Length: 435
Image (tube, rainbow, N blue to C red; front, side, top):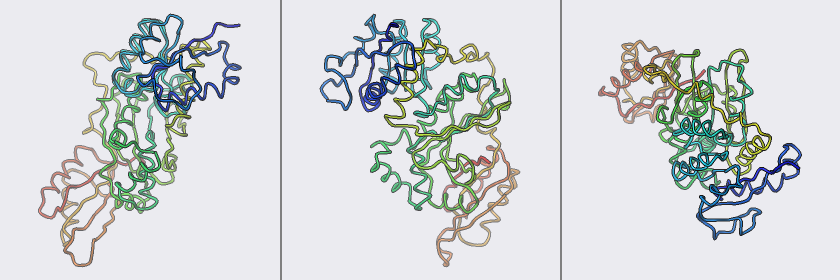
């Protein structure tokens, strides 16, 4: 019989409990597919009193993570604590102790990933992270292995189920953002404090990881332009639908060719209603990857939850049990950026189509004011919808436009000019469009 892969688990919350349940429920299937049996020896969590809905023995649970990190019998550590600290300390110490690490921690990887990868390489151990992006969707392995013969040019995705559920409900029922958020909380799809999700930070962590893998570049969370969904109004979604679009929070990474700077951004985006991502609704995630010669591939599924995440975590454990440590490589030599080379394209150099919602005095000249300011910046209007509040002319009118191809710098200049005009009744709201 092959020597077992003895593992330890740090973090025994919802996801950790899900991993334990799946390991037990799928034990025969897992054993039939890898040469080494997987044996969980120790679980560490600061809360040792609460009973979990998972199969474990009380003597397996300890309060100090260093107990399992220092255990010479344990070969691999699963980190499910989340956040930067103490997770970073646990992962570093496990790697330095010569142990493989499996993690679902997107924030840790988006901030400290290259350093941790370098440490894993130095110690000749694996750092595996399939569960960090997309839950059970195998996007990490697709980028590392399945698409490795391609020059990848674009990764775009709906990477946060909370935001996608909110936007879906706002579109289906014309709900205000706050009401859709309350509904998401009631359904258990949003945290009590949803800031991390609705401000786009969760998606930014994930696209930083995907962009790093796709392009072989050192892209961190701090490099990602990030705009959340909190300022969206039902009128924006209504106007988008009337013009043939829906609105999704997308993580976008693009690069024209190897060696070129990359666009890496997160924001609510207008995309065609009939596009593949336009049809991804509710809590589901969807990711499009473009490359040469393959063209476009799509990945779809549940992006969060104990079942989806445990599937990805256990797939990494099975890779270790099959002695496939190559799964852990981030093509580290390509993550080292030459001094003086700018890898991230600045946002003011972005060129795309734009959606802009203006709130203007409802009287003659409003549209002319908008048109002049845009024309002065070389921006032309492709389509326009005007919604009047009433027939009296006493309340502002909402004018929503989509532009032809334009530069971000020109759009922002035009908006500043319009907002400074006496006919402007409120700040403009701008979104970007992906055709």
